[in-house]
Image (spheres, rainbow, N blue to C red):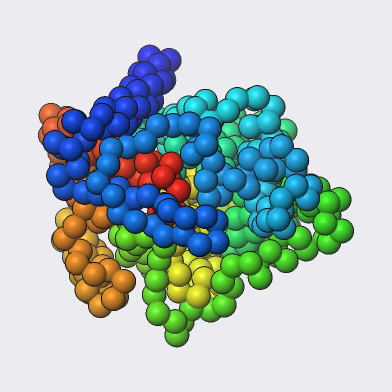
Length: 468
């Protein structure tokens, strides 16, 4: 097992090194103009904060420097790092929408832009190693899925000075603690997790929903209350600590919710579907039709089966160290969480789907599903897999062709979407592939995947339309 962990560490280092190598090479005008520049353009922001335009330009990637490393959400995280929630700039109130654990870690580390990018990817790499060891330990397809987890387009988020890496890592540590039956470590990890991103609110309801579904089977109300209390207690505590910290600066117990007036918070059922970038729109569309809607269908079927299940089942505690139960519970919890994100978007986004893939795929729950998918699909017939893929693809095609925002879908800005579409059949039908075939798939996939991630990263550095 130690040898496999060492191999995974080396893979993480190799992927990060390749990313940086490709990014550096594409800063060379000659290389860029004769490769990526022939099929794409970059973006450039012109003007000031209030009056600006985002223009397409034909120029190489830019350097990673202090003056371009902190854009979009990173501006708020950096400000929290320096002054927590103190009134240090005209937009200080916006910071209450962001939780403090990541900027606190950033502050303690004492590092700047170049190194926070590396540290974030390191956090992410450790998290994926932990999750793969928990859910794919001793599986023949472990390395294949582990490498894919580092290459899919959504991984670009983990190179940014955002909270996503710690969001995944803290939950992974909590899962590790469950497997090792160390409740104190689970408690501490989940407190930190709850202080990382506001999505913890959705997690509370996902935990309760999962426990209710299991209650319908075992009918042991005492067990339900005990497990739910132990599970949610550290989540509530972390949430409470953030609330107190924000109250100390704002004088309001609802500081986070007060920031909703700064962003669209109305239902989008009757609004035109929009996004902030074409690149993000393609990846968000994939997440909707290949991940989120299947999660909705699964959750509905699972709920119906739980209601109809007759007789009593043996009660198993999430804290007993029973790996089979923990894996099954977490798979169901993860899909309910993704459904909760969809519900939140429907009620609050105004049909602006910006960041949807970030909130459904750059999260620990996506990797829990990804790493358990091969086992879940073992008993599913080929014809049913083909039907599911065909339905998802048809729905996606209809959506892309009928939403005016999409425009011409045969262009470079949709490479992220096509990279997702390309790899999905290999994920679904992985059991039928030989080791040699898997290696070929990875070799074909790795360079375009890394180039796409560097392209998105350069968008971020250019302070252009953000893809998250």
